[in-house]
Image (cartoon, rainbow, N blue to C red; front, side, top):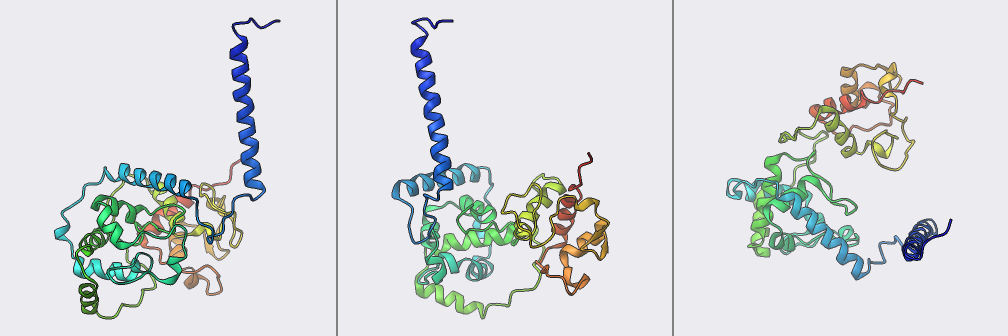
Length: 293
């Protein structure tokens, strides 16, 4: 079978494209497996890489923040609750008027955005979205499972107001708060707006946000395959939880919230799991059943 003269250029183009695609795949695999890319935090991203990532970040935040209904910030206690939460949770990485970030934050790659820049460049909706959702691969955690809606908006209100504060103003406000309160052993259950997710979906997200994957291999949760604790695939079919508790929903919730009260010798720490989150996590874990042959 011969190829007509008219079709030959098309065949050549297709063959060339296929060859380039294969070369790209092989080159990408070699790039990854030969360790060509230097992951050292002492070696900064090149400016083109940084520019592309920063543009993608800004566009992603802007698009998703558009869906948020921002309430009037005047209704939030930025001088009290907002300032206190920012001092206790944010200033370490982002600084504040006249206050530098902690030393560890200055060595992060990318360096966390300065508070002054966020106050000037970000809208209230964008700030809230970032606080609520966090940013992948940046060190910025999502606070959805740690702060209430009211608290997050109070932090947003403080950040926006901080653009008008001098270093002296800030120090006076911080002094009026008194000493930081010690962190409680268990987090207070934040009041969250309904997202329309099922308990199983909320539980999957909670399992991720409480860092369970750092010790357990969990179906459906992306992360390094860790074997510090037992894998959780098929946990719904097991007769006992940690070998000591009958595997019921009530016992699973109890175990997730206070593992060492059940077994003082357990290496599993208390993570401050709230009642609501434990219930959702138990719903998710109940879906992890062994597949029948």
